[in-house]
Image (tube, rainbow, N blue to C red):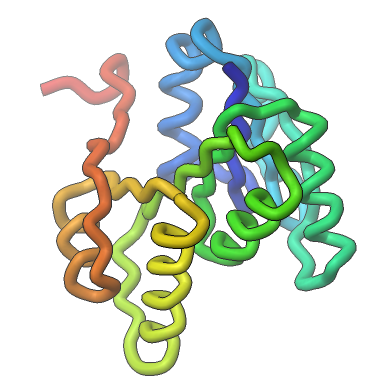
Length: 173
Protein backbone atom coordinates (compact mmCIF):
# COMPACT_ATOMS: atom_id res chain seq x y z
CA UNK A 1 0.00 0.00 0.00
CA UNK A 2 1.12 3.57 -0.71
CA UNK A 3 -0.13 6.59 1.27
CA UNK A 4 0.23 10.22 0.15
CA UNK A 5 -0.21 12.81 2.93
CA UNK A 6 -1.02 16.37 1.82
CA UNK A 7 0.30 19.04 4.21
CA UNK A 8 1.35 22.68 4.08
CA UNK A 9 4.95 23.70 4.81
CA UNK A 10 6.54 21.00 6.99
CA UNK A 11 7.14 22.44 10.45
CA UNK A 12 7.72 20.71 13.82
CA UNK A 13 4.06 20.89 14.81
CA UNK A 14 1.16 18.49 15.40
CA UNK A 15 0.63 16.45 12.24
CA UNK A 16 4.30 16.44 11.30
CA UNK A 17 5.37 15.35 14.80
CA UNK A 18 2.81 12.54 14.72
CA UNK A 19 4.03 11.41 11.30
CA UNK A 20 7.63 11.39 12.54
CA UNK A 21 6.90 9.40 15.70
CA UNK A 22 4.74 6.94 13.72
CA UNK A 23 7.32 6.49 10.94
CA UNK A 24 8.86 3.25 12.26
CA UNK A 25 5.46 1.55 12.24
CA UNK A 26 3.95 3.17 9.17
CA UNK A 27 6.97 2.94 6.88
CA UNK A 28 7.37 -0.79 7.52
CA UNK A 29 3.72 -1.41 6.59
CA UNK A 30 3.26 0.97 3.66
CA UNK A 31 5.22 3.29 1.42
CA UNK A 32 4.71 6.80 2.81
CA UNK A 33 4.79 10.00 0.73
CA UNK A 34 4.22 13.60 1.77
CA UNK A 35 3.20 16.40 -0.57
CA UNK A 36 4.11 19.74 0.96
CA UNK A 37 2.08 22.59 -0.54
CA UNK A 38 3.94 25.40 1.21
CA UNK A 39 6.13 27.95 -0.55
CA UNK A 40 9.07 25.85 0.65
CA UNK A 41 9.38 22.31 1.98
CA UNK A 42 9.88 23.54 5.54
CA UNK A 43 12.47 22.94 8.22
CA UNK A 44 10.98 19.58 9.26
CA UNK A 45 11.31 18.00 5.78
CA UNK A 46 14.83 16.57 6.39
CA UNK A 47 13.71 14.77 9.58
CA UNK A 48 10.70 13.25 7.80
CA UNK A 49 12.80 12.28 4.78
CA UNK A 50 15.36 10.61 7.06
CA UNK A 51 12.53 8.74 8.82
CA UNK A 52 11.52 7.17 5.49
CA UNK A 53 8.96 9.51 3.92
CA UNK A 54 9.26 10.46 0.25
CA UNK A 55 8.81 14.24 0.07
CA UNK A 56 7.25 16.05 -2.92
CA UNK A 57 6.78 19.80 -3.08
CA UNK A 58 4.18 21.74 -5.03
CA UNK A 59 3.56 25.30 -3.74
CA UNK A 60 -0.18 25.94 -3.47
CA UNK A 61 -1.70 28.15 -6.13
CA UNK A 62 -5.35 28.69 -7.06
CA UNK A 63 -4.80 27.82 -10.69
CA UNK A 64 -5.67 25.05 -13.10
CA UNK A 65 -1.94 24.42 -13.53
CA UNK A 66 -1.56 23.68 -9.81
CA UNK A 67 -4.43 21.20 -9.73
CA UNK A 68 -3.24 19.51 -12.93
CA UNK A 69 0.18 19.11 -11.27
CA UNK A 70 -1.48 17.90 -8.07
CA UNK A 71 -3.27 15.16 -10.05
CA UNK A 72 0.04 14.23 -11.67
CA UNK A 73 1.75 13.86 -8.26
CA UNK A 74 -1.11 11.69 -6.99
CA UNK A 75 -0.95 9.46 -10.06
CA UNK A 76 2.87 9.32 -10.20
CA UNK A 77 3.07 8.35 -6.53
CA UNK A 78 0.80 5.38 -7.23
CA UNK A 79 -0.92 6.02 -3.90
CA UNK A 80 -3.80 3.90 -2.70
CA UNK A 81 -4.74 6.38 0.04
CA UNK A 82 -4.77 10.17 -0.28
CA UNK A 83 -4.67 11.63 3.25
CA UNK A 84 -5.67 15.29 3.32
CA UNK A 85 -4.38 17.14 6.38
CA UNK A 86 -4.86 20.75 5.24
CA UNK A 87 -7.98 22.83 5.66
CA UNK A 88 -6.95 25.05 2.75
CA UNK A 89 -8.11 23.55 -0.53
CA UNK A 90 -9.15 20.17 0.87
CA UNK A 91 -12.42 20.05 -1.07
CA UNK A 92 -10.58 20.95 -4.28
CA UNK A 93 -7.94 18.25 -3.68
CA UNK A 94 -10.71 15.70 -3.15
CA UNK A 95 -12.61 16.82 -6.26
CA UNK A 96 -9.52 16.69 -8.49
CA UNK A 97 -8.58 13.28 -7.10
CA UNK A 98 -12.06 11.90 -7.80
CA UNK A 99 -12.25 13.39 -11.31
CA UNK A 100 -8.77 12.58 -12.55
CA UNK A 101 -7.38 9.65 -10.56
CA UNK A 102 -8.16 5.97 -10.12
CA UNK A 103 -11.64 5.11 -8.86
CA UNK A 104 -10.11 2.80 -6.24
CA UNK A 105 -8.26 5.70 -4.59
CA UNK A 106 -9.33 6.08 -0.94
CA UNK A 107 -9.51 9.72 0.22
CA UNK A 108 -9.30 10.52 3.93
CA UNK A 109 -9.52 13.99 5.52
CA UNK A 110 -8.19 14.42 9.06
CA UNK A 111 -9.44 17.58 10.78
CA UNK A 112 -6.56 18.54 13.08
CA UNK A 113 -7.99 21.68 14.68
CA UNK A 114 -11.11 23.14 16.26
CA UNK A 115 -12.21 25.36 13.41
CA UNK A 116 -14.61 27.88 14.91
CA UNK A 117 -15.73 29.44 11.66
CA UNK A 118 -18.76 31.72 11.81
CA UNK A 119 -21.09 33.37 9.32
CA UNK A 120 -20.54 32.95 5.59
CA UNK A 121 -17.25 31.07 6.00
CA UNK A 122 -18.89 28.55 8.35
CA UNK A 123 -21.68 27.97 5.82
CA UNK A 124 -19.20 27.54 2.93
CA UNK A 125 -17.08 25.08 4.94
CA UNK A 126 -20.19 23.13 5.98
CA UNK A 127 -21.28 22.79 2.34
CA UNK A 128 -17.74 21.82 1.33
CA UNK A 129 -17.47 19.14 4.02
CA UNK A 130 -20.91 17.70 3.24
CA UNK A 131 -20.10 17.64 -0.50
CA UNK A 132 -16.81 15.86 0.19
CA UNK A 133 -18.48 13.26 2.38
CA UNK A 134 -21.70 12.63 0.45
CA UNK A 135 -20.65 13.12 -3.17
CA UNK A 136 -16.89 12.55 -3.23
CA UNK A 137 -16.96 9.72 -0.64
CA UNK A 138 -14.25 11.22 1.55
CA UNK A 139 -13.83 9.63 5.00
CA UNK A 140 -13.54 12.24 7.76
CA UNK A 141 -11.50 11.80 10.94
CA UNK A 142 -11.26 13.93 14.07
CA UNK A 143 -8.20 13.47 16.27
CA UNK A 144 -9.81 14.43 19.59
CA UNK A 145 -13.23 14.20 21.23
CA UNK A 146 -13.43 18.01 21.38
CA UNK A 147 -12.65 18.23 17.67
CA UNK A 148 -15.27 15.59 16.95
CA UNK A 149 -17.89 17.55 18.92
CA UNK A 150 -16.94 20.80 17.15
CA UNK A 151 -17.31 19.18 13.71
CA UNK A 152 -20.77 17.87 14.63
CA UNK A 153 -21.96 21.16 16.14
CA UNK A 154 -20.59 23.54 13.48
CA UNK A 155 -20.71 21.47 10.30
CA UNK A 156 -23.09 18.55 10.96
CA UNK A 157 -20.21 16.10 10.48
CA UNK A 158 -20.10 12.78 12.33
CA UNK A 159 -16.36 12.22 11.97
CA UNK A 160 -14.73 9.00 13.09
CA UNK A 161 -12.50 9.45 16.13
CA UNK A 162 -8.85 8.43 15.79
CA UNK A 163 -7.08 9.80 18.87
CA UNK A 164 -3.90 11.84 18.49
CA UNK A 165 -0.70 9.88 18.16
CA UNK A 166 2.02 10.81 20.59
CA UNK A 167 5.69 9.96 21.09
CA UNK A 168 5.72 7.52 24.03
CA UNK A 169 9.53 7.78 24.19
CA UNK A 170 9.23 11.48 24.99
CA UNK A 171 5.94 11.72 26.88
CA UNK A 172 5.26 9.21 29.63
CA UNK A 173 2.52 8.97 32.25
